[in-house]
Image (cartoon, rainbow, N blue to C red; front, side, top):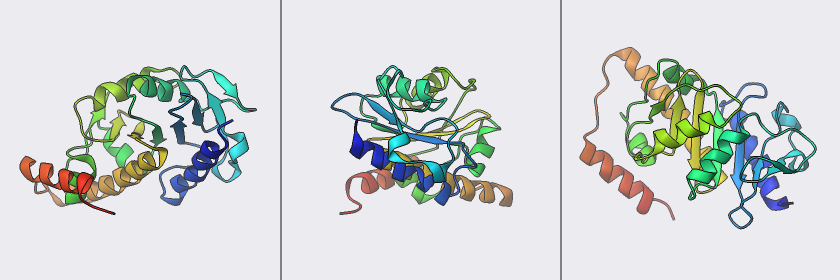
Length: 215
């Protein structure tokens, strides 16, 4: 089932270790097929070099396995909760990337102090509360945290990062940009109090990048 989407999700997983966003088997990507409403997600506990399209797991929107020989990711219930409550989202990424997670251990949002953050996130990257892994509670926090925010990313207190996108690739991009800007913010905060961007300038940056930039 969903052979092309399995291939896409499998290939995108290689971007996580390539961009130093994960360690060992942590982290996962999923993609929702808008036509069938089925979700392709990483199998639980499989090392990234061993991932293949055929060992991706297909679940329904409620997280029940439809096709696959492996257990689905332990974050499956949360991914599916997000899909059910954010219908424009077709891709989700979860990582424990180092600098972003450092902010999460303080329950602290990543401040919008660069033009790149204004472009991609339209403001701070917010931090939500704490929830244990395994159920849909993390997904609930992600949905609550991103409501009213232009950011495609949020932090989970003491846990890590969730990003969303219209496609899985866009969610991966958001995860890469989250960690890159977290590292810049971390270094900047070590130097003292960063300069801030005016809200009006952030609005202009976000509008240009989202609606004008690129081909």
